[in-house]
Image 1 (cartoon, rainbow, N blue to C red):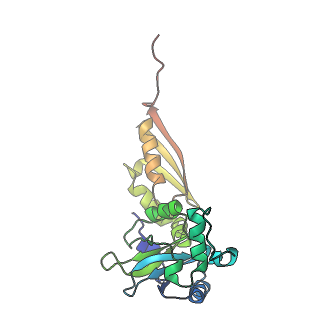
Image 2 (cartoon, helix red, strand yellow; image 1 turned 90 degrees about the vertical axis):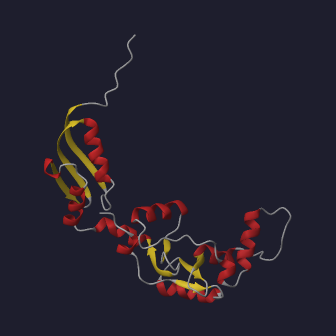
Length: 218
């Protein structure tokens, strides 16, 4: 069973309007104990995100209005952010979003690639924000009940009765016997792809090694 964002997401949409002040943004972050807030338009559609890093520029960038011809594009960008006072000026745009039907695995990959800790969840039809997915929500898949995890593991096995399964804190130990070594590897990889599996110890024996590479004849 593929776990989707709707199964673990927070139902609170942590967002501010585009005209929200610097102080409003800080207040929202403190209230919900988050490191970023989504910026939405009047129809509650995400248009950007303001993170703690964006706000910290106000403190660390002392030269907010001077411009030097030797500045890099990044430096000019940081100066503008440091001088900003509203969410629309502070935000990074466009907002990276997911929908309730997005697989948690894909959402986790997106968080890792973009180096972000939370994602606004939007309605796929209206585009309006309906919740927030945090890193801690994604990690909940690794605390699934063992019986539930075992059922999903057995569901990906070609013949569940032909294998033994032991699960300890998300680590799955597989036993059994197959004809070919490639089959044992395929089974282990299928189990590894199940959401909530931390690691796989494959002790599946095989009768024949179809992956053996013979040296060329001289």
